[in-house]
Length: 429
Image 1 (spheres, helix red, strand yellow):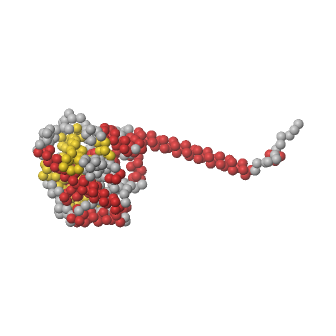
Image 2 (tube, rainbow, N blue to C red):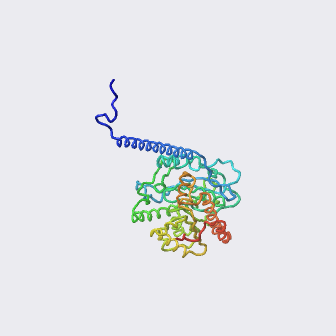
Image 3 (cartoon, one colour):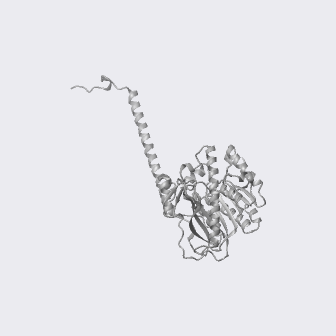
């Protein structure tokens, strides 16, 4: 009976080291496969959480004033000026105005949509699937606190007017929380968007205009960006003057009679965020109708840097303590300080420790809270969103109360007591 040959009897025996290496590489492949599977499952779980969050309703912070808030919109064309940013040389300037105002407490008016459906659709189509479907909430599920087109409150004959300007390509409605809170304290708050400046703009016929990359200075070389910024600043301040002119006409003779005589144009202020804050500075420099202004985390530009201001003005900055070694940031700080030092009585300059550039925008609620929490862990914007808004809304309405309603100046001095996050002036290194 023949014997079964042993491994050593084989004419080509397999080395033990080769067998070991084969088993070793199999283990590595199994480990890689397991890690890949875990990564895929983890990524799927993350996207599932983001998708769930995207489809979850959220309520913005409630206004702190005693007035109920109404919101209406206007579409105005400036037939006297052509739009230098439009592709057509004969295109006229136009704006979409969103106005929040004190309304009667009991009203049958329906709730105002945070952002109308055509604008939501335009944002989704131009933001990409990741940003619009996973990293941003469905804006139809963002609950604000305004009614749509109710009557103006009869508590006062007229109300001070404050112009609002968002920064960069941001939409005015990104600042609904600030606008609603100010309106609830007895102000007419008018913000506006414009085509070729705002990220997306929806005309009355629902055609969509997007901002071309050539009108966005964010990723341009410094010299080119500065040229564009100076051009945009002139357009934005001109648009602001046009909006104020239209509000004066509305106050004189509103076709619907709702706002006739209800806007106190003698008590006009302006505030803005980022480049909107720079616009607020320059508009108050250019137009004596502005009686007080606020710049929220905006770098100054234009002739106001050299000339200074005559009106009471408030600077609110996020925490830039990590950036003070950067030459460009130091220059921005120096420009703000220079304007501030030359202001008359009624000036204020605060930094909110732990706040980031977007702590003043509704993006703190629109964007994924998982991502925002991760950024906080990394030390980028340590301040909790609702806490940041409590501080900002308190300062905004109190500053305008003092300078447009003649409230006691001491009410501003007391504000820092409940808010240890407040630092007077620039953050220190």
